[in-house]
Structures are given as structure tokens and as C-alpha cells.
Length: 112
Image (cartoon, rainbow, N blue to C red; front, side, top):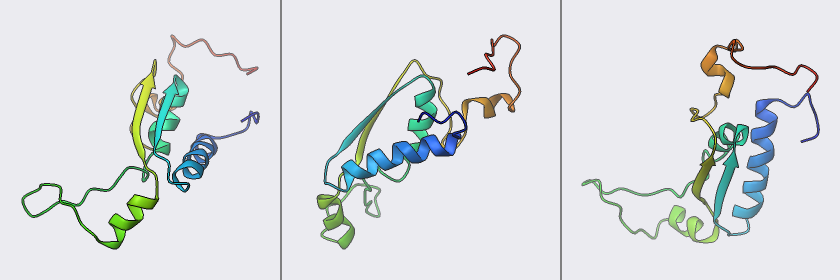
């Protein structure tokens, strides 16, 4: 996290590692993200939500399948709280929405 050359993917991987550490120990996780962390957090939670099995009518149904047994022993991301962040689609950085061109109203500090 102190690496100025770190990429968006590096940031996602770091958050996914922290989430995985908790969920593999059977704990549910609520990810709280602020500012740039919202774009990272939104992408990092992919695949960690609790799967639901739907019946033919579209209703959730209880099951004793292997996946349901795994769910009981594995934690999941049960919430994502975004504070003062823009909404981004999973896998996209904030700047992707601007086609990676800095808008004229942004003040860029190239030293940081």
C-alpha cells in the first residue's frame, strides 16, 4: 500500500486478500470504503457474496447440497458501504469513465 507504482489491480488484490482471510475463517464481512476505496471495494467484493439457489418459480429455497454446506462454514461479504465515493462498475477505475483523460476541472499533483 506504500508503493506509488501499485496499480488498480494491486489495490483490488490487497482488499480481496483481507476479505478472503476473514471469510475463510467463517466470518461474514461488511466492506466499508471511502473515496477511491469505493472503486476498489466495489470490484474486490465480486465472488464473495452468499450464493442463493432459486427454485423454478424464482423463490429462494433451502438445500442440503454441497454448496449449501460450504456456505455454512465459509463467511461471505454481506454488505458494501460506500462513503463519499462515485459509483463505478465492477472492474473499472474511476478514470475509465473519463476515457483515462484527466478532466480540466481536476487539479493534478504529479508529485504524489
